[in-house]
Amino acid sequence: MSNQSQSYQNHRRYHPLFHVLLTLLTAGLFVSAIIELGKSLKAGDPVFPAILFLIISIIFIVIYLIIRAYPLKAQDRAIRAEENLRHYVLTQKLLDPRLSMQQITALRFASDDEFPSLSKKAAAEQLSPDAIKKSIQKWRTDDYRI
Image (tube, one colour):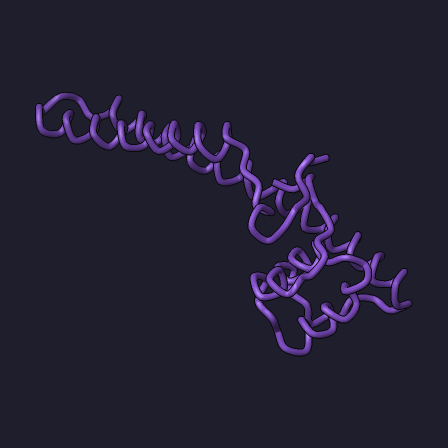
């Protein structure tokens, strides 16, 4: 758990190894592959190694995107189930089906006191996730999602 209480201003989380290092290395690999292909074409050298280098860099980009997307989908499913259960415990009703996954993800920060009414308002007015987060008066910390 975090030592600092969470709020709209500090709720976003980053993992430096992924969001900075891996992003830069993957981008650098791709740019290097394009430069290498350009040099090979300009010099009249065989292009097969440069094309292979480019294909490998594209494979890394695809892997990079997948290793971000798959865990987020799993986390979204868990958040939907958790928030549906929480809403049911508080109101004896499931969440409004009009709520999008992004809205539910934003609602998870709302305290139990404001969660049911904010859920209803978010569904009725189709509030954006950002508007939902800005509406929260008492934040409920979520230190597990990145």
